[in-house]
Amino acid sequence: MTPGALTALGWSAAALIGLAFSGLGYTVVRAFGSGAGAYTDSMSEEASRRFEDLFLFIPAKRISDIGRAAAAAVFLLCFVPLFDHTNPVSTVAGTVLGLTFGVLALMAPSKLLDILRDRRRRKFNEQLVEALGSMSNALRAGFSINQAFESVVQNGEKPISQEFGVMLQQMRVGMNFYDALQSLDKRVGSDDLTLVVTSIDIARRTGGNLTEIFDKISLTIRERMRIERRVQTLTAQGRLQGIIVACMPALLGTAMTFIKPDLMIPFFKSVNGMAAIGLTALLIAIGWFFISRIIRIDV
Image (cartoon, rainbow, N blue to C red; front, side, top):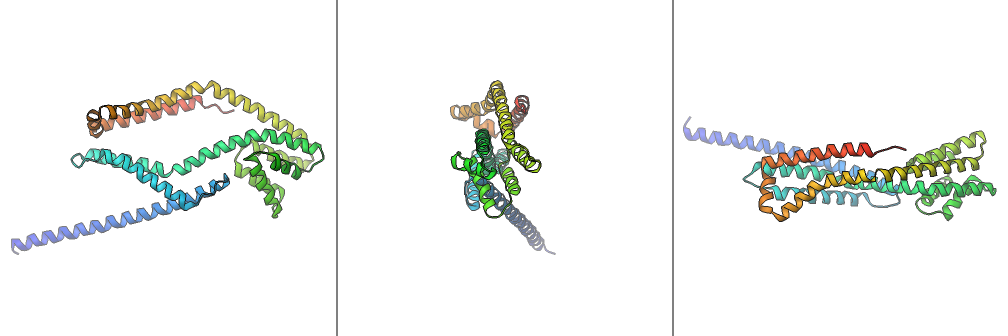
């Protein structure tokens, strides 16, 4: 075989290998994209249902679009400053950093939902104390337990009036009283409400005095809230220290980047700089973990 034929054969083999790897890469990327899209849609639908529990009616497609747009923006924000075709280490670091923070941005709607749900739960617990007193007075006046709930819906504030209103609506369409209470307890996710629901169920089965039970539960919840506020006051300094310690390196690095970009940008693109940033992030995470464990006191 002539040298020209061998050269042509070699180029043909290389082309076939490249084509095979290109097809494999395309298949993997397409499968990954399809799986990621399905996961994102599923997560968006779940987030949409949980937003509806908070009486925030946002379509699942809108949540998915917001998450993808945020992920793309964060990826470009992390990747573009570190991209350098002459420095593969910086490019790889930018890609990894962009993918990491992009995934976190994609999960941001779910995290935002957890924050809103927690705030709504705390507000519900604060209103539950007054609602129990109102229901106790209504029962003393001769109202039924359903009428006591209706008085809270009519005279109460959001979110407790909304949640009790949904429970009464479920009862009007055929759900029994106990199942409606269980649905309310599951939807709100409050330990205080669980105590109330359990007490109502026991009183209905054994014939207990609901007015006294509501008064005692109200007193218990009020005392627990007083202790929680006291704990929050005593641990405020520790929480502030943790926030300052976690944010100070990032703020100083950002300030130095704007003040001395010719000094900081090469540092970010170097191997030693990447290692230093990674070690700093690890130490901050460890410090924040221990601080959060120290100041976390369950009441």
